[in-house]
Amino acid sequence: MRIREVRVAGLRGATPEGGWSHELRPDTCVHTLVAVHTDAGPVGIGSVFTSDDLVRGALRVLEPLLLGEVATEPERVSEKLHQHTFWQGRGGAITHAISGIDIALWDLLGQASGQPVGRLLGGRYRDRVQPYASLLMDRPDALRDHLLRLKGEGFRAFKIGWGPFGRESDALDEAIVAAAREAVGDDVRLMVDAGGSDAFWRGGFKWALRASQMLAAYDVAWFEEPLSPDALGDFVALRRAAPVPIAGGEVLTRRQSFRPWLEAGAFDIVQPDVTKVGGISEERRVAWLAAEHGVRFVPHGWNTAVGLAADLHLASAFPDTDLVEYKTGSPYIDELVGGGWALDGDGMLTIPDGAGIGVALDPDALACWGGEDGARLLGG
Image 1 (cartoon, one colour):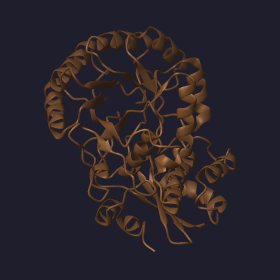
Image 2 (cartoon, helix red, strand yellow):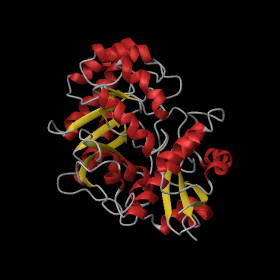
Image 3 (tube, one colour):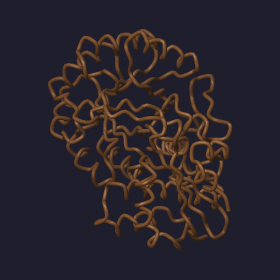
């Protein structure tokens, strides 16, 4: 089975707000689906957390290395792509595009072997995992109402992020967290994401330390991206001083970028994003490296249903990964997969056990948000 063609479709029309200072609009493309077509017929699907313009540009570089390759050897083929593109944007759009291709190749390997990807990664430690509802922060009353709705839908873990937090006043920060804890109750996990990768982030070490002390009073499970993603030394100092666990790493790509952060002790929880880090092949290597340094691995998942499926398989393959991120209010997650997703009575998601990543994309949804490219993404 060899690679015949790679197709892409950027998703537009239902892009949720990101909380960024330069806010996303519904027609902003930040998620792109990838389909790897083979000469034997099967098609593998992947997802990339970047625009289709960048993915198409990257593919013009990658296709001469990719077309005709064996479609059931994801790690070898992805490493070939990395090795031959050092001078073409290592860690940027090239790596992001390789991420989607790699996910699709793992999907093809699973289809060819009749096994779920999680089993191919070495074995499944679990067949279901808890998703945490990921939502933007708001003013206390509006946030409280939003959280109560999500709790009513069955979620039992929550992360609130970005919005006004760290951008207006310490008093507002605490009011937001207090309202969130009141809404979700004392018996569930609550996480806080400052969004330090936002443009021109102003929160420095001393602010982050004060905020962490406030968060500890509300039993916050982790404090995510409290600092600029380049502030390695401050992350290390904060992790040592903060009374709550520190999480980060979503902006890093390839395992080599994670190594200095893990070796320095910058994180309690590391959060690579499978749709940009280099795919499943790279993310599991990051997770192995994290385990060697006593750091917990929880995937970052602000993406699509395809990215969520990949995260579920990764979560199944690591003994301590008991959470995945679920971006609430995004049709690209809720409606892109035929039949959608359903929480069980314990607020858990079942990990797909079909061959490959185990999900089928809805053709009508593809055509709706992917346009003509979406309509032909999977076709012959």
